[in-house]
Amino acid sequence: MKVSINRNLRVMKKTILSKKDLEILGETISRHGYIVSFDDLRVLLKDISYNALKKRIRLLVQRGWLIRIKRGVYAVASLESHSFSNIPPLAISRVFVPDSYVSFEFALNYHGHFDQLPDTVTAVSTSNPKTYRFQNLEYRFVKAKPEMMTGYVEITIDGQKARVAEIEKALLDFLHFRKDSYTVDLVLEKLKEAGTDLDSKKLADHAKLYPITVQRRMGFLLDIAGIDSNKLYENIKNTPGFAKLTKNSTIFNAKWRLYFEDRFVK
Image 1 (cartoon, rainbow, N blue to C red):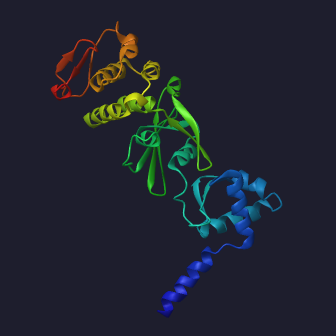
Image 2 (cartoon, rainbow, N blue to C red):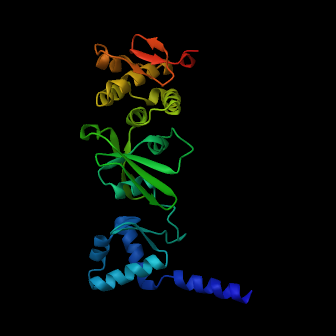
Image 3 (tube, one colour):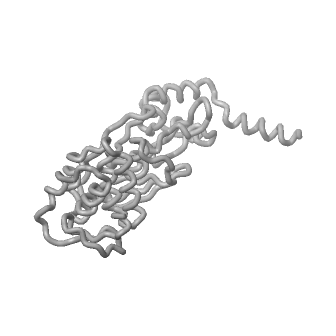
């Protein structure tokens, strides 16, 4: 029992903040939220030397009050819980690739259309595909053409800035970047759920930036979901060629020039 008590006391001693460090972290959170750069801390602590600042940061990292997200950028622990669970993944994602927006499941979750989140945050950028890890989540970035970097909203969540795809853009990203049957079923389900929340004109405008195949697939799914597809149809009504909704599609839809499976019309 005595050994256990002594061990707990040592752990507590290592995590206890001095009055000065408490003031520093409190002011950091007040100015910058729970994500802070080395340069931010340097401005805040302008009265101490560069080496002294590095030493103080290292000590706060060792004691679990700061954690490195990437070089020169840190997450600040909650002063109440001494944890990093309060920092939204939407904001963490943009730290890794600033010119990006979160899409797919986490975007739909933000808009209230996805409950069970995966352990991967997927975002879109113009950079080559990259993957990072922070805490218990993987952050994956897929590459898009520059003209496709639109259709997101700038938000502030828990004091942190982030970019999140609109519902329409997130659903198009699903069909563009993921081509399996599960994704098709998921998009159809979310179209039905969204209903009047979906802006068909906005969807058609965003869809112009995607390949014709994506537009054909989305148009067909809109019809199945009972959502107005007229504006999207105007985009492609005179285009040649055809597409497949899934790899097992064998039935032809003349309107969208798309092959589909019979399960979609039962």
